[in-house]
Every structure is written in structure tokens, then in C-alpha cells.
Length: 178
Image (cartoon, rainbow, N blue to C red; front, side, top):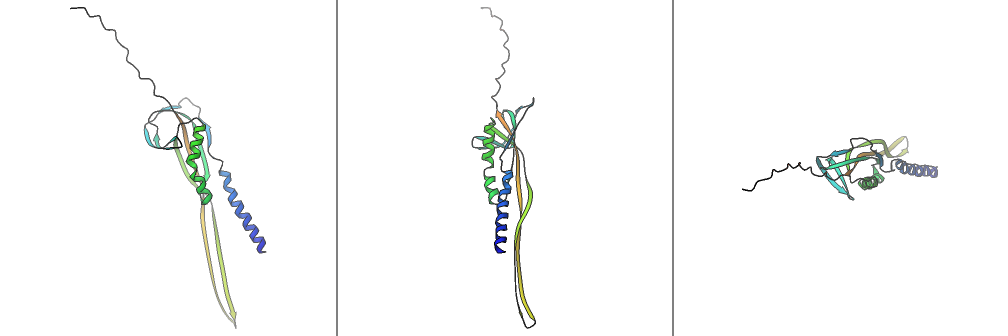
């Protein structure tokens, strides 16, 4: 019986580790198609990861073209989640470069509770002697939320500034010699 319980425990552990791989596919790029793809940004908060600018609040203070969006959903909790989350920005930067982008603009992110996992342990001891029962019991349990993290970024390509417009020159009237 103990071997069966041990085998089932191991099988459940393997299944729990394999379950998060469903959300481990990485960022998904969707191409933008529309007339209003070129924008002039106002500026904001920026950091650079692997050569790609991440605009966390605001947008680039220059002209840029929207190429599309990146959506990413990954497991967040536990050791596996910590490893996956540590590579989020690198994965987004790689996907943005692959799509031809120079930068990404954070559109939104959220965490979602997808389940609860836990464990418990109980112990009961007792003695019986001459009609008298003496016993003790103890138990311990812990539960933890399982979370997924979802983020969405807009992928943009920096554009050169348009040439400065020059005012048309007006012909000067010839001056006569004095």
C-alpha cells in the first residue's frame, strides 16, 4: 500500500510540474494593419533590455510606426514560475527584434490566480491502559495560490524625423547702384 501511495504521489508531482508548460510557449506576435500606424510620441519612462527600448509609461518622444503587438502568458509561482518570469523581458526583446521592432510600449499586464495548491500532515498518538485513554494529535497544513502572469506590449519601429520644411524664398528686387 505504501508503494502505491508513493507512486501516486510521484505521478501527481510530475503532472503538476508538466501542467505549467501549457503557458510556456513564449510571446505571440500579431501584426498591426491600419492607416494610423505612424505616431509622434510624447516621452515617458524607458529602460533598455538587450538593445530594445521598453517604454513602461508613455511612449517614445519621436516618430514611430506600430508594427503589431506581443502577448505573453506564463506561469508565475514557485521555482518554475520564478525561472520563467526572470526571462520575460529577454523573451519580449527577442520577439520584438524578430518582428523588426526597435522598442516596445507596455500596454498592460496582470496576474491571474489559476488554482490553489497545498499539503497537510497529520499525526495521532494514543495509549490505552485499563479503561483510560491518553492521546494527542497534531496537524499542519499550508495552501498557496498558483498564478499566471499575462502581459501585452506594442511593438514599434523608430522612424527618422521628416526633413525640416524650408520657407519659400521671395525673390529680392535688384538694387540700383547709387
